[in-house]
Image 1 (tube, rainbow, N blue to C red):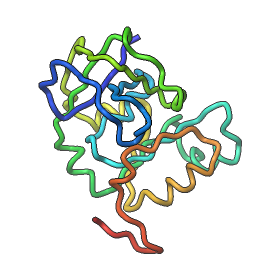
Image 2 (cartoon, rainbow, N blue to C red; image 1 turned 90 degrees about the horizontal axis):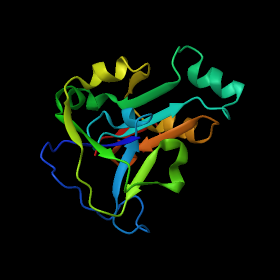
Image 3 (cartoon, helix red, strand yellow; image 1 turned 180 degrees about the vertical axis):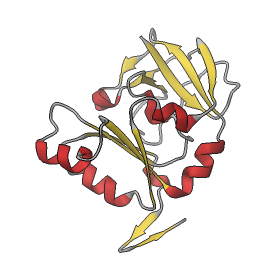
Image 4 (tube, one colour; image 1 turned 45 degrees about the horizontal axis):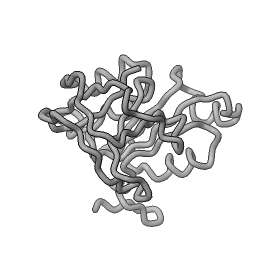
Length: 180
């Protein structure tokens, strides 16, 4: 099994464990993602996104609500303001051997792996057409002016989901959205 890490830096020779802002209880680690969920990271690092997909536990009501007009099993939603950045970012996919990694137990369905040891990548390749790569991967890429409504619906549903960099989403105040 191969694992991946995505970066806007094309010159990382050795990955060194670092403290995690989102999981401060962990010792320093290197994060990686499995192939199945690697598409979650085909976006600029700081781009907030809500990703949701069908699973065995998804009930009929949620299948209709979230996928009723779709032919795909996974949907990625980002804010409109990120379109130009997505089009223009230089993004690199680093490939790792799984030897020093272990499944991160808090995120079994999201496909996260961690390593406590330094890792040398097996390969690095630039992703030249992010939108094109996402679209040929049988997912839907959706844009919205405000991620908060879809986030709130997803977390209270039976779909599987991953919410990434939401701290960078526009601030939502009542019916108004504020760009910070």
